[in-house]
Image (cartoon, rainbow, N blue to C red; front, side, top):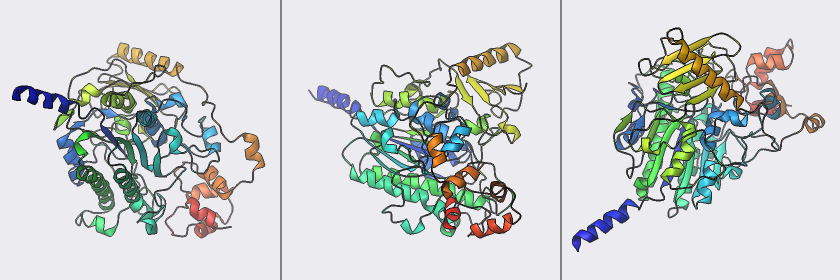
Length: 519
């Protein structure tokens, strides 16, 4: 009898995690090599390193785009962002039109948070959004995408500062104080969400600011690196703050007794930003590492899209497992997480990704389809030259339609993409190029038809200072440089003097708040 009781207990225990919680943490501009468990020699990331030790670490995980909005769109939809005509960061209506983009990610189809919400999960999103513009009259809020609760920045809806203990630190991502506390405020809201729903399964996304510019840290945070020179000292401190906040959320789950029944996933939306040498430049502290990968943010080399990926779930994911072979993509997350939670996909939905849950469990599984990328943004730096790329097994191929430049690499022997093999394997290169061109034919040529501000209504409506700011902000980094301001006022002879009047904190850039504060 005792034998059968034991079998029964083991059987029921194996199904106790049938409805696991999900916490997906998506960092911003954090590089492949920025964590201790990914080989960084100096940055202290004990909490993330612990997640990797207690779970699995994957070195071949890629996001679907080398910049923010399209990368995040792919995570929620399970589709390549090009299928929604999201090729770059979502901005104001005029800029979106110039980029042949919609004003927001289409909220009307199958989305990851919707699937979990409809399955009885409590859904919440906290932190960065950037899937619909903040100041557009038709911006859909996170609730329309399936999130019942949200507190955000870079988007519409309740902000992380509202009713926050960090309200006195309120600022945007380009304010040194605000940038150092945005993620703390978002983590506080995420904690409140967990504490308000201790007895129901949850699906939660926490998207912190780190390590997007402006990278900032308090003196107390920088004290952990007393012998590290700038700009590395501030960058390291910011990444360690991110690690601390991850540890805080893990601690809440542990206190609630829900840690081991929660799938915790950690990654980043794209590779690290390019740093600048001048201390007063907004990118001075952006000194992230892509490890031994070539390329950074905005590049289709692996350094632009190959990012950290850690998964912890003791019920299914083997502790200490490291997968250095399997290509996994952000477009896989929708089918994979639904499989993990035993959620059925709609019959009319087909993902660009695949169910990689067996790989998360430590098993071997080959992809049945290659992965594709496109980049329609700037090609200002040489690593950003490609506008299409593809990965098939260990092979990756890059091309530019407007030039004859082509590159082919075998990542198994050359993860840094240093040896172009296009002349060595012309047949493989030609086959992969045909596959890219065939994939391109499946993409829409125009954005989906969404409710949006019409050209006529825009012409009739008075231009606000926010509209003018958005129009002048050519690189869409939410900060006007002197060059952008001067071009905006068409070379006014007192441009530098007028710029200085707006630049209240004398940091060399004008925020939308500074621009709107003056008449």
